[in-house]
Length: 237
Image (cartoon, rainbow, N blue to C red; front, side, top):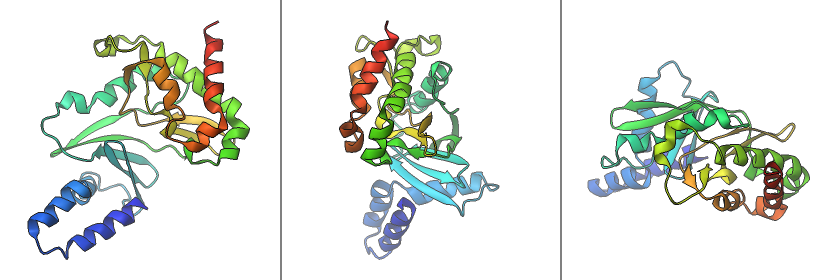
């Protein structure tokens, strides 16, 4: 859907007589998507770009190529942001992946000109927060146990590789956007992966709990948040 939306908007930009205004809309409002997309096509000529799906969320836009790879890039290019901050997601996921009971994908950082892309394998599944309320309600106990185990093992992990990122404000490691990024196998309703660690970092456990349902009315109303907290407490015994 987003691919067609951006194509249509880009097409109508051609009819704006003011060149500077036209450039502004394409760069700021459309996130320079066309240049980013064609930069990828030139860099990876062996991939089938005829089957491309575009995604948008948080700081990034992304391209799912032929249901094989996901390439994500920041919406806006900011030369004032240190390179280390841009690849922070890679550092955190690489350090926490060994502790996770849910699959965490290996992220490859690829610099193409002024753009820095995150590349990782595409997971065939469906985002949990897109399921109907009744479906989440029916499976909330099993799902809640999986999420609780993930939170417990990640929050209490102590990887030396990212020890320098620990701050006084927090009590453990958080994904910080669980609600939007749990990939589920719709056949058995098991969580098969968790993606998009761009907000991950050191934080408070209560924040992680709240973010499990914060952005989905269906998940919030299903009561899965209470299941997650109850199941988490079992790991403390």
